[in-house]
Image (cartoon, rainbow, N blue to C red):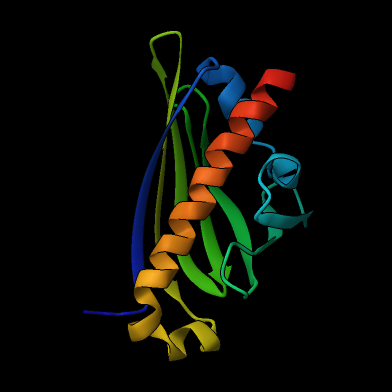
Length: 148
């Protein structure tokens, strides 16, 4: 087992239509407005940005996200990730009743030396940290979508 490899899957039922959800997710520079753990997003160009994240555990992660797929008809946004983690992340937004279902998938390898050093004993904490971050993101996006 590679203790520095992670695959995550989160599902967010949201009370907003898919187009509105996808529009919000397609503006990563606004994530810090509704997702407290996304501390900063700096756009480098139309498809690339630097993201600084910090959840419950006392460490920041900095990564470069480069959009590799944008398919509004399919409800898909995907990015390649590099920096403190390497891999990819994908949002898939589908209709669910009168709202949406957001599926977030991520497959990454941790490259940040501090996190690699604590890979085995820290793995359960890192997974909980991610789950808490995703829960906060869902709540934040739900509230944000009510205001736009």
